[in-house]
Image (cartoon, rainbow, N blue to C red; front, side):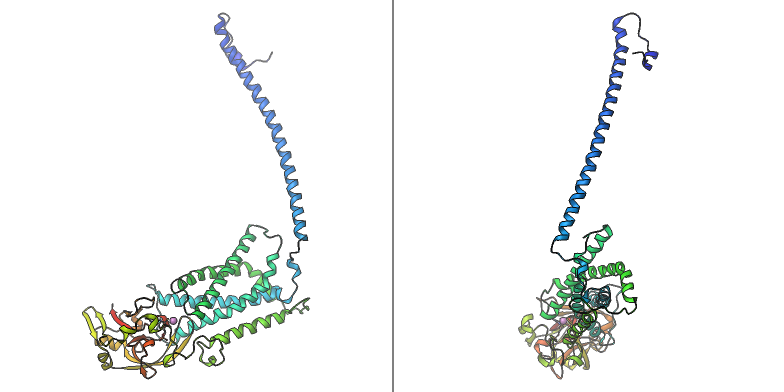
Length: 449
Ligand SMILES: Nc1nc2c(c(=O)[nH]1)N[C@H]1C(S)=C(S)[C@@H](COP(=O)(O)O)O[C@H]1N2
Ligand SMILES: [Mo]
């Protein structure tokens, strides 16, 4: 009661007039009340906080106990543990050796696939030479062969690392979680690329439209995650590949390390030899699974028949004329007129994007000759249109590089005979170092751009 509030000093109560004296008095009382309330609130809050801290600690203890109980249960589950896989296939060295070969196969596959994509959808800056004539045959053959080799390699690699699925703890940290996630993306993308590519090769364009776009897009995901994976695993890779030839400890169960590696190399070799005959002539007779041989008409595979392309009537129409559009106007040439022009013979491969390729003897008018005959310039870009209207391969662009090459032909004959209807009668494009898909058959119009 004796303590003085600062308010008391500043505003002493007025001696007379009750009504006036009571206002500062009430203020002081209010202040004191408020002060007491704050004090009490602080005390109450402090007590609550202490209580909350105590229960948090308790909760943490309970959680820790629960986790260790769950861990114990998991330990007791009949799920194997990473350390239990002792077979020779599961060591770091096996994974690293198969993995580096798989990485090389992916890289070759990616680069050659990117090339093939650029040739078919050339941006401004892109240039693809017309010589050597077998260049595309080699790059696309390498694409399909490296892809096929990657299949047994991927399976072996997955087999080698699958015990890591049982690694515990499942996730150690955020980087560890990201690393595991990137492996999931990598495996998914790799699996998709290899299986869609294989199906495409085996079934002859099962998904006419979406396949190239999706296969191309996922290729970037695959190669991106390969780079991330290699970067992350570089220390392991270096350790596994540089370690001196340690004595091989006999595998507890199953294959030894060397046995597993040998099996992988043999499986890869068999897969390549069994299919590469489609593009490597020397292997043709040993390639049991080679999906295209010289069984088609005129000793050349047929990719799409005239019936499938719905051109049987138009292509055989005696009134057929080739329209050649130049800046000067449109010329119409009969088959007889085309035959009367100077003819060129060339040995050129058809190299399909599916990987098969086959050399044949073609005869027809070379594009430089043809362009000069219609008043155009060799080296101009030419848009080629087919009588086929339904499919996706009804037109193509011949870049200037190709129209200036005397081996680029508007072919009228194949292997010494008039072009078979299935190979593009009355005339088709055949150019050196060019994807088969751009060798347009059943041509009806050329536009010189
Ligand atoms: N108009 C047309 N031309 C086409 C095709 C097509 O489907 N339509 N297929 C192309 C593909 S994918 C290839 S590999 C070659 C195959 O030629 P071939 O059937 O004479 O062997 O033709 C190309 N020309
Ligand atoms: Mo093709």
